[in-house]
Image (tube, rainbow, N blue to C red; front, top):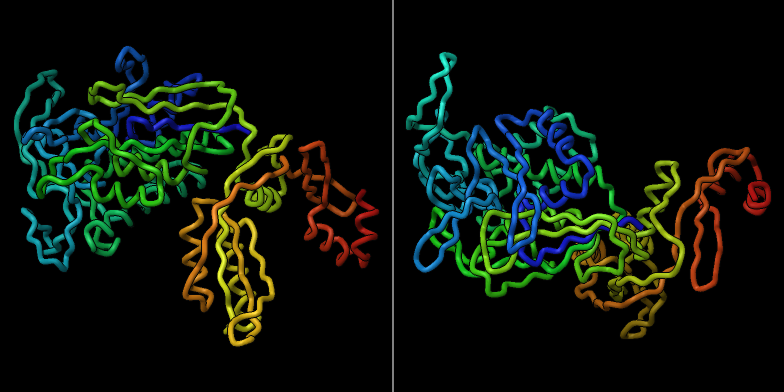
Length: 492
């Protein structure tokens, strides 16, 4: 199976992930030309060689109208800018290079009554990443060929999540899957900001420069992931850094609040490196694409990429990504369902046996109707459960009841617990973590005189078996007026 492994031992930022993934392509400059053809307003992406601790890799720089975001760590009582772009103004309010501050908090609640340093003509006081109009210097080249530098006041615009979705869906020529990925990542960031600042997502407004910078990072990574098309994505525990970060509203701990919220339920650690190593953009991208978090799987690597940041530490400041083949499996049931819906064969599962980790959630129910239990089971399957089943159980006071059990991947745990509480009457859910042995599986499309039928092929442990999908066989039986057994004989 085609597997991608992210080594985030020195954190992760959007530009570093972009750079690492670019190194996996045979023609990275071709991708950059394709990216810039999207014409994200004012955005320019450049790629250059970079060396960290003697390791050669790639650094990617994204500028908006010539301005590049800058990270400012708080060390020994001073704010130090490092020039990297791990923290975007839209993410946690960082001040870009021309405003001399880090500025964690971009979101001010309208109802909180904070007075921003400038207001809009209609009197609205949106959430701001900056507290004042920035004064900055820019070089301007005029038609006469003269170049000069001058200072001027730049009035910054602010953008809502709705505005970002309008830009992505209506103005960027991207495949629908990539658009969905971009907005899913942005939704994670917006929800984290909403939680960190205790305001509705609709009240979160992003600073224009930081927004476009982040749109560029997120879009580039989503495009690269779509092009590389891994079957599974494994991410190492994430090094978030330590110490403090200098912000517009004061000095905050590392990881920043938005980053910490996004990385909830993800294995992270601090270490001795002083500085912000993982940004909200990096955290959201990893969380969205990760099949699971953990150690590097056994894999035959075909390509390795190094994405470099600008900060310099005793350890190499880079994200490393491996692309190769493994015997590990992903959520095969979801893969089978998607393949069946698309009417195409799945080549994602290799032959042979394998193991993975599943979460078992269970609860006892004695005050629900059969219809309500059935509805709960349907909702759990719809949300991606690997398996849901019920068993009759004798409850206290001799009441008959039901034991409801759900199997799911670790990344689905929180969603499944929420659905159990929402759709059942239970007041407690039990959890067990277990390993399971799985036969290698793939879905094959078979053409028959009665139409397309999907066959599930399994192999491993010296065993090989095949089974036609019930729904396909049942459809033919209904259409042809045959029994299930007759259909099986015909298509075999």
